[in-house]
Image 1: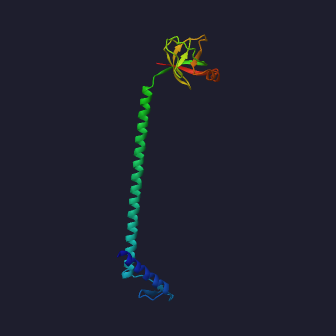
Image 2: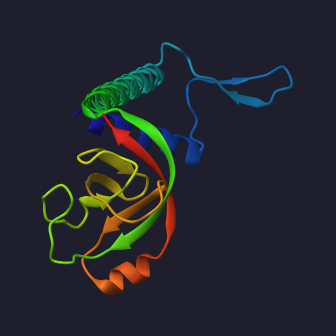
Length: 188
C-alpha cells in the first residue's frame, strides 16, 4: 500500500513538472517572473517530505544494521584468530618441552658404511637411519646429526675421532653418500 501511494505521488509530481501545469502555489517575483513555490501545508508536499524522510530513516537503519553485522563478523573472526594463535603457541611450547635437550659436540665428517653380516660392537645388528659408528663417543650415545636426524652410536670403526660412519642399506648408497660434514649434538 505504501509503495502504491509513493508511486502515485511521484507520478503526479512528474506529470505536473513535465506539462508545467499551473498550481495554486504559483507566485511571481518583483520582476514579474513566475516562481513555483511549495506551500509546506500542501498535502502533496507534506506526503513527499514524509515519504522521503521515512525512506531515508529506513536506509539509515539498514546501513546501521549492516555495519553492526559486519563488525560482529569481524570481531568473531578476530576472536577465533586469537584463539588459534594461542593454541598454536601452546602446542609449540608443549613440543619444545617434550623435545630432548641437545648439547653441541662439534662439526663432524660423515661417511657411510654397509652391513658385513656381523653384529655391531654393541651386539645389535645395524639398522638404516638409526645406527652410526664412532670411535670418540661411548656406545649407546644418542646423537642428532644436523640435516639427517637422530642416530645411536652402536658400532666402532677404524676412523679418526671427528668422523661418524652412518650405516646405509647398500653399496651404491654408500658411494653416493661420499664424505660430508655436519654439526652433531648429543641428545640428553
